[in-house]
Amino acid sequence: MEPYQVLYYKLFNATTRVIEVLQEIQKEAEELYIAAEEESTALVCRDGSPSPSPSQE
Image: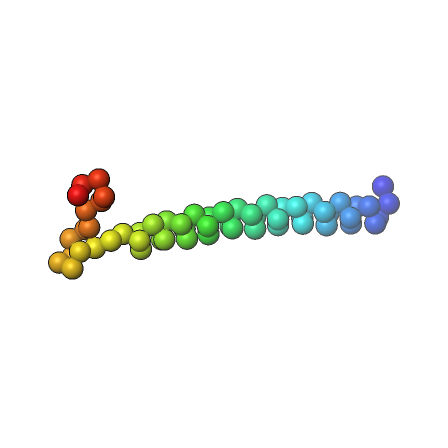
């Protein structure tokens, strides 16, 4: 195999691994964002108790 082919394959493989790592990190960040958004959207009454859900009213 020519030296440039070896270098190309090494670069290609490393780039592929980096893309996979970035995709995994993006997925984790999205999950954290969604979880934080769900926590922050909880309604609270003025007295500090949780707001009843519409089915409980």
